[in-house]
Length: 434
Image (cartoon, rainbow, N blue to C red):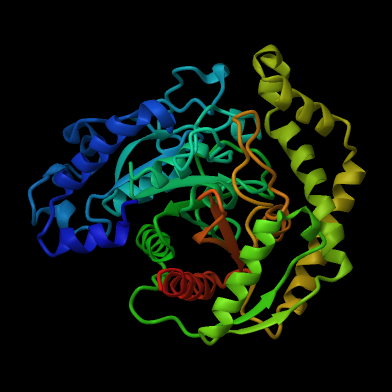
């Protein structure tokens, strides 16, 4: 994989030019895209890619020019194809929007360009960011799913095609594919990354996130794009207070995943972290069930135009989800929202003596086959609560498939969550590499 932080430092030091980094990405796409299918469309010419930047001075590719001194150093960034792009088609994984071209970039795209990132292409999304498989393959084993709905973004980073990619999460669509593909995945606190210009799926759940080679890479990118104090690479992270949480879904985790979580907890504790077992209160279990109601109710309404005008062009799996949403009453939805609100307070109380939680990212490694994108069971609750989550890579099952470990923080404590994730990631690297 390509480390965004390492590449940016090498550009800054004069060892690489932004054009050379872009060329490396294009070469990797040419070599692997046919097998993996991560992109809907990508740009293979540097001049076309930088031409969309608003400041004419930013098109200068010479080392020492504006791109070389910008915050992202001209790094190539890919966007899930539900982010609007004025210079590239935005098709939402649906035939309804074939060749659709928005008039403006999504806010996250514009902010990335403003920070000096070069948009190299649009990555495959499942249909309307649902759980309908999209055909992208897992770079670790082409017979396995990369997860979804941010399928292409996770696969593109894992395959070394790009150093950074954006996705979104409504249930588990950043953390799950990051875990399956062995990348770092950062789902920030709810709406930390603006969603203006991103296709709505469920407006109380949708959260934009980032994929990168490691925790420091996604923290670097988020910091530079959002202009927030999120970088974690300037000093060694402090030992966090970790709540080891198996949740009521623990029996759904595979033996390999259960072992991976226990292993990560032991490694973190040996490295100096405080680790205590914590059982989640019953209201959080109730909130998990409420997430399904909120997502289905809102998705049916977010896709009202498509459902009413183009129902025959919607895949049967998504149609079934929309039909379920149509059957949910406003009273049932409102009750689910109240359950979620109570759960956020209970979660805050539960976290009073801990910095972060350690819990599985997924039930196990990426399932074999492309008929499904995997189960977001271990992500739904945290998405509902709006908490920052980070998939920590570094552990694998006996077949060499990645097993992701999830760090969950408190709302608004994104930097602390990233620091704790980096602590665990570095501890795993030292142990596994020894």
